[in-house]
Image (cartoon, rainbow, N blue to C red):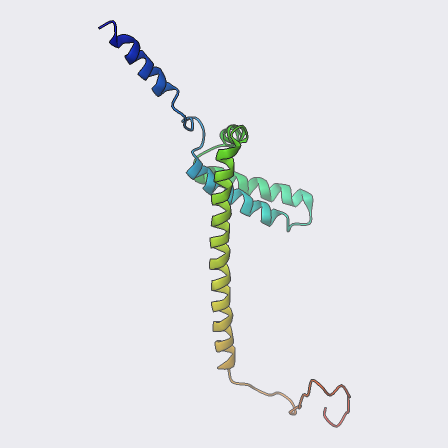
Length: 149
């Protein structure tokens, strides 16, 4: 029995030293979603020229993100500090965030192309109504003769 006691203690200690993200830190899969939302908001905020307005809007959006994920700013900051001290994990998180941005951009562009095609179809099917004399337009003719008007 005395031989097995050190082995059992060794395995217990080995389990305690098992690498992993502590439970008191936002897990990487959840952090990816949070960072995606935060950077999306950051991108929007940079389009607002009035700095005071930008700060108010940013605060509202950040609080909405925290509420969405059931966290607060202290928990988010504690988790970010952990990931700053573990750059390999943070790099993996940001690689996945970048992939998500790429996928979302592709979806957005695809939808916009489809929307543009649909708009052109709708516009091309609209009847043209003239409210004045017919004007022939030649883009290569730069003269402004009154006979055409």
